[in-house]
Image (tube, rainbow, N blue to C red):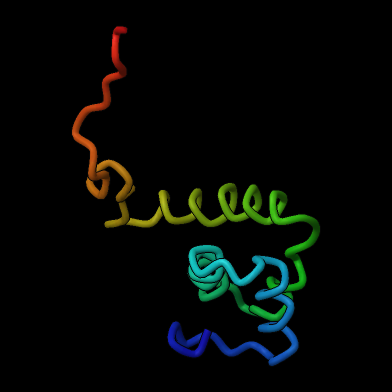
Length: 90
């Protein structure tokens, strides 16, 4: 969180790590969302439930917010290593 310039308590960091199960991508997506909040500690407390619920929450909140930002686009198609997938017709 420090790297992203987000001031949160040590308790909030521990809670966030626990709720994302330390998943680096989850922590990064959470940081992207938290940096725009007036009170990031409250945002951390908004995370609740299972890892699946956290993933759904991040998808809904973070990716939607990023899509609305000017100059932000989805990187998935450009970061894919496969140009084409085809199964065998055996």
